[in-house]
Image (tube, rainbow, N blue to C red; front, side, top):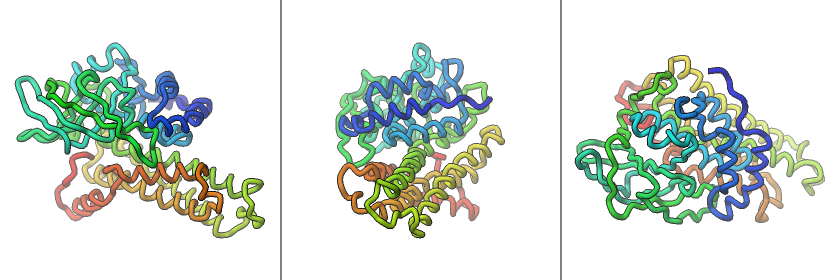
Length: 376
């Protein structure tokens, strides 16, 4: 596939940035921004061509998510999660894909994969599902939800549920990533989910799919583990630009003009290095997988999972490096670095951004033990 044109244009970035305050105040993305992202084609980047999708390479998709995050990390987080679901649904049955995308390529799907609040019982032709799921980003704009559940004797599955079968409870009152609208999904009375609208974890792990193009050989989790940390790269880019702007020229009361301060120079250099490192590792990993027809080895997948899990940790260290010397004005509410600091720190709360278990698994596999992670 040839390299596509930029989807998130400077004009669209400006539109997204202009709604960022509104997103934080309303604790969800605006309809205007969602509609603009639809028009841009962003939500169709991972969708198969036969449904009107762009079938983009992950490198292209994540480059666009970074551009969104440069304007607003909440929009990149929620929008990216919604968009990446098209890749998972493309690995499910054709019947499921038809139900979701045949009439509208821009159908939006949210998710909550944590099964802790789910109750799933097998029945004829499928499952009965009820429970509560948290952190369903962008759910207010979606007409389907992918919900995690563990079935006794069967294991973990993702179950796809239409909007009329669940409620959205407004619970998202947080200090960062406010605009993601990551509210709870609630199903009080059990609803029926047919077998074809489920995705078994082992199928995602093994890359089982029904598409003709090899891009869908890529294990599903290799896309999702990146969608919840890549926004921090874009936010960190904006933080660095903001820091430089607020610490030089007319923007500072410091008569030394910190542009000439050696420590400041070193901090800026370290952050620029971190940004380049995070981008280069991610893009390099996908380049390597593409060269293998999107069929990485287990060892690669374990390493890539750990590297994705380290992004937020490194981004936190980088933005702390800037905020520590952001000056006296940075303590006042509304300082432009504060929201970026909050957003990046709050992203650490997502389980995919805690590298501890991924490090242990990488160490075990490196010593010849069996892989213990099936979301790779």
